[in-house]
Image (cartoon, rainbow, N blue to C red):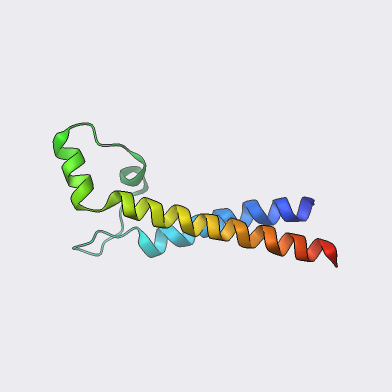
Length: 84
C-alpha cells in the first residue's frame, strides 16, 4: 500500500509538470506562461477579459487533468507492483 501511495504522489507531480510543459503556452506567441500567471486570479474586469481571451481556464483544466492521469497511473502501477 505504501508503494501505491508513493507512486500516486510521485506520478501525480510528474503529470502536473508534464502537463505544464505541454499546455502552458500563450495561444498567439507560443511562449511559456508563468506559473504565477496561471495560479493568480484576475483582479478587475480587464484581467478577467484577458484571462477569458487567453483561455486560462482551459489551460488550467488540461494541466490538472494530466496530473490526475499521472496520479491514477501511479495508483494502478502501485497496486500491480504490490500484488506481485
